[in-house]
Length: 467
Image (cartoon, rainbow, N blue to C red; front, side):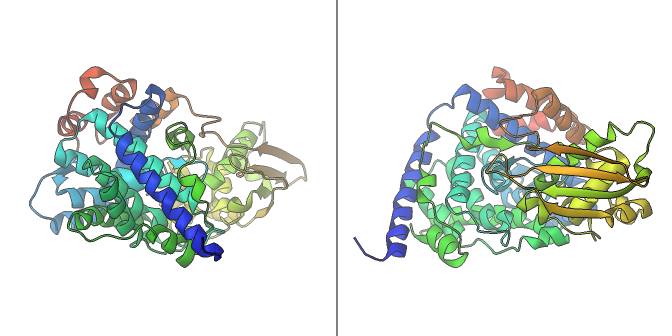
């Protein structure tokens, strides 16, 4: 063996990567454990809701029209948007990829900075509809693609918030998903994913914090690139087994933990460690939003206008959300000052606190400027890495404080299904009225839903779609 530690690590990573691909290609051939199937269906439903919610934003609608205007005449896959129009699979995947993260209501993975559903589902669902893949096979691909994508995020963690995970892992996740839907063997899966990994991009993390809306385009571009990487691999155009290591550990200077690629495969599933969101902002702010809602419930005869200052003690990631004057709704969703000020004033961490009209609202802007951030002493490893203590100081000097060590929504404190189904209905019913009931039946394993092809599934889900 070479005495060069980096070469040894590179080879070790390649060996674990190959084992991961071998497992993934085989895993799609077997039924999922019932609890994992239910989690995969819940993630699918929640993220379809996020796509629909984002689709009505004006920038998304314009981008969608541009996608459709330049697409081929093929009608292969559904765009989850008003009218539920169909387009070729690449157009549908890109359009759904643009909308899925727009409102910050998609789910995420708790143990690494990674949104496994956002990176896999836009391409996966478009490819599945084009091929009319069976519903149960779609759910297997959801769980396995999520597994592979999140394991790369675990194996190559960034040392700080400098590359956004939507840019780093979206191409890879889309390629995994499409390859699994196409039924590729391990070698072809390797070719698809390594090629896509070479086409990842260095989208700066601060793009989100600063509110540049191109951040929401990374999952759209990633879906298209991942699908094309699968096409090209089938033509013999691929990366190499060392490509992921070279991209992440060498070029991006991430850490490398190759054992994370294979440890416990088939025994523990990443879909079991996902989180869901009912607050329309970055998850790193959720503990502070929860604490602020707790304080709202204790106001008594006071009002939020009586607050003179807000102090937020947060974990390292929460401290990065420091923008005081957000220029866009995306910047507001990545602004701790805005999140806590808006929750205090509007009494909700939902979409109403992050609309465009909140950005320049005088009372909101004034309270944002009176928010200070400080480190939360003793923040732990996941899932205890996102705590917050929020202290309100009133004009008369009195103080009240609330602490949330671990926000709700993760595997350790999950939202119950009625809460998630209520969120789904809120996000979809006005556009796709049939979606909430159909997706609830999918989660429950209704055999009349589970036994059909994805084209029939999409026809049922989009029945009565409103323009």
